[in-house]
Image (cartoon, rainbow, N blue to C red; front, side, top):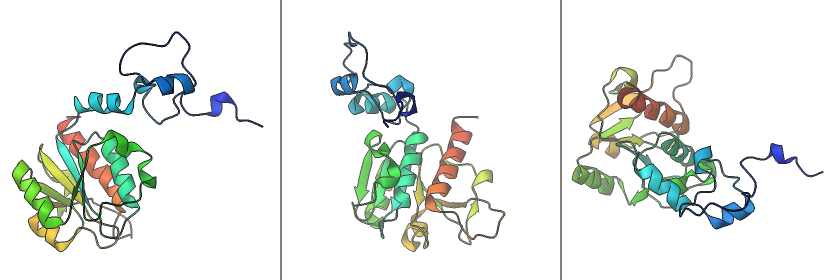
Length: 205
């Protein structure tokens, strides 16, 4: 039996007459919009949504080291969309597993850097301090650290964490305080906490 219309995500075809504004996508108006987007963006084209988000993006960037095609990269990108990062930077191979992103990469500005050296050079040219997120010995608690308003939050791959070269280039290294027996959080969870903490300091305060 076919699923009930109310069980489906989003909305069906738009009643005619269709709205004429340029930000609406004719294909979505005709077929319905089943994307995971806010109601205000229903039937909008991807380009129109990106342009609207660009008017409100926050001043932090997100960077991810990609040496082993970590599945968590998709989760970090999804969080970057949720917390409205200025842009996302992938360090290393261009290819990454997009399943965890749930198509949210379409609404972000993605940049690639061949290696840590290239990324560090870009950050320096942009005047953005790098804040590494890792629970290494020299790290400080993120919840009691003033995060720069303009910065790059850098996350490492699952397991090894942020590379030594990236840690050496970081302005600061912050850890997320934990209370259980596990040594670390996966990069997807850690990125969400770190981005929320930045927003708590600079948006919600």
